Image (cartoon, rainbow, N blue to C red; front, side, top):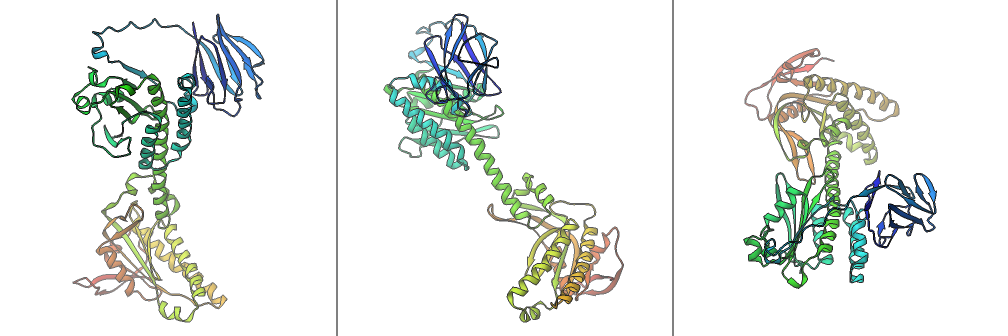
Length: 522
């Protein structure tokens, strides 16, 4: 009878060898390695006996427990709960399977052996206790200790790499440190296909070769790792590409993500029959692939966070925080390009700003403008608008992009009136403080415009452009201090228009005919 320690609320799992005493502890060289701060480096000794398992605490700091009772030495049977520190296991009995039949020469052409080993990829080195035990016992010992040390560095280093391309480069570097491989390839899933991202030889040179699709297909479809120690003669995986490339031995392991989805494939091979891969190499690659899968997900998540942060940093200057968050969480929002859509566009501009700036020192002017712009932007945001940009002392805002509402024109109108009212309040305070007053003119238009992200991946600016925008700007230039001038196109879409006075049609630059306009009555 064999026995198994199944982790309770943890991912550890150990098969107990019936031969000798197994060391349990936090040290990575332990037979049962449990990386947890409540577990001592050498916590307990475990051995298989008749009908159960002998457990002896060896002076651990946080104790060994059987069914919740602290023990110094005890005999546990299937169904018992065994706890080291705060890491609990269920003791289970495992029926021994009959040995597999010895393959015949007819069954294994060319003495080729293919071992497929289904695994749940490790989520870090701490979960690969079987591998650690094999490493510790392997020959030569020094080489295996070096491999173990490299894996420890891998588990620490790879998960900190936040860029996928840099991560893949590091993975290939580690492969050649760990295994006697001549080549390494990494494939990642893109949609329904596996796309080769890395192909290197041991000299760190990029090489052109095609990973055998027969092996990749098996690894991806069956979620297993494959070792072919005579790949050229293997009838299942030996294809023309393997023969032409003179591959002698090959390893391939899936990169399985947190939702049991194959993220990619890690493949290595060599050309020397004297350096054929063995089962220890396969176990090693499985543990390594588990770490790589975690690192890939971390890198992908980090890249997404960076994109969203970039989007938010740009958008929060132009949108309300709630709208910025809504946009940043949309894939469409962070893409370059855009679309035509109906928008209400508002421009406001300070009258006599040049003369005013000549009378004030720079610090006083900066304070004055900061207070003014703060109030104006608050008005735009209060009515659900998008701050497009500042143009000198002018403010450009729009309603309708990237989020369209049915009452966009009315909210633009309300914002314009609010801007005039808030400026009146500012002027009252400035008058008391002995500071100069400001007057603004506002122009509003409605129509179709191009709306989208303009710029690069590193610097995006969401804006609207087109004739609708140009007309709004020119209406603003015609407005006197304290005036709000709107186009006929804008007036026509207002559901609840304020009192308006029709003005004489205005001639605007770029327009062949005078434009009908209205002034908001104050």
